[in-house]
Image (tube, rainbow, N blue to C red; front, side, top):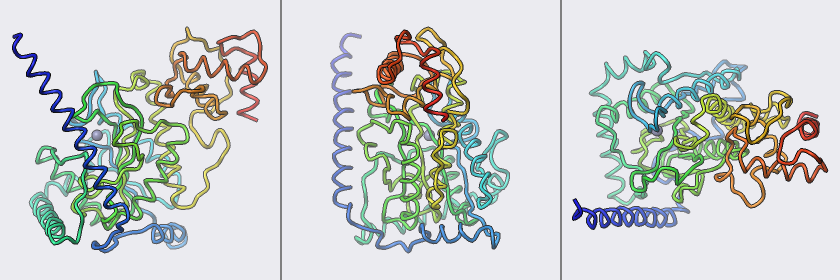
Amino acid sequence: MKTIYPYLGIFFVLIFITFIFRQIVSVEWEIVNSNRASVFFAESTNRDTLVGKYLNALSNGVKIKILVVPGHEPDFGGAEYGSLKEREMNLFLAKSLAEYLKSNPRFEVSFTRDDSGWNSDLEKYFKDKWDEIATWRINKKAVMNKLVSDGKVQKVGSLYHNNAPEKVAIRLYGINKWANENKFDIILRVHFNDVPLAVRRTGDYSGFSVYVPEKQFSNANASQVLGRSVFNRLSTYGAKSNLPIESAGVIEDQDLVAVGSFNTVDGASILTEYGYIYESQYRNKEIRNALLDEYAYQTFLGVESFFGETVPASAKSDTTLLADKFSEKITSKSKPSKEALSLQIALEKLGYYPPAKEERNDCPLTGSFGPCTEKAVTAFQKENDIKGESGVFGEKTRDVLNSLIFN
Ligand SMILES: [Zn+2]
């Protein structure tokens, strides 16, 4: 057994080198392409057209069609961590997102899957059109490869590779083809992240990122504006991904099937990785569900602002986490709770959370009154001249916070 260790060492060094090299290559490709707009594929959608349609939706009844796609198959695939399954988190968030979107009468909202499995229309489509989807995919790929070899479209590096099992890949392309034929204006893909295989060391990274089609694709314009809009809303309270390759926040990708690899999506399409599945705040069900609902709401607000709607600034309307006035005492001995989660976001709103010198990735919204929250409460008390409740969220602190947040 001893003799295997040197080889293991070499193996990990090789994996590390591969990862670093990939990042460098990817960054260089992006620099080369940074000023190149879509030159070849005719634009299939853009923001102005969508906004025009939105503004007329109530008078002519032609609504903005939105497809919400909880990532992965109904019963397999996606990241897993302990008993947590990404595909279930995706579905929870997607259902909540669809509810918020339905509150806007200009939107018509559909799903690819729900609690009972695939959307029945889509399932029938997979069944009836399986070979057609496979052929379409091959043709789209051939066209793209020809354009690349003719120098008309620039190949861009990507972190993602299409290594999904064949049947899963066909269904992914099937969703794209079906969405095109049913003229969906907007496609929102919901995912949670895992650490990329090349750097699989649980716990290294956290936060969200938004993937959009690479700028040469036909749906790039609208998708990128939409992606930025959703990104901005999620950034209001959330931590963006600290994985170096995701540092842009909104990341262009040419190889992700979900946003239109080989130019296979006509509508505006974005894929959001809402966080890393192993982040500690997702382990408590109540906190997890509250956070997923909040992410859904911020995504909804991002879509709204894409269409020029102003996002309300009051405490109750710019987050789901400040519904009620604070009424409980919270200390470091308290169990994780929604009230503590609300406390964190209230302190964040007022600029005390994360505490000074800390990043959001180091002090995320957790619903647990740990050192981050204690420091933030202490700073808040100092600034507001509150005495006698050192390191505790007690009555005096609560009254001041309530008056500032729910004024
Ligand atoms: Zn996923």
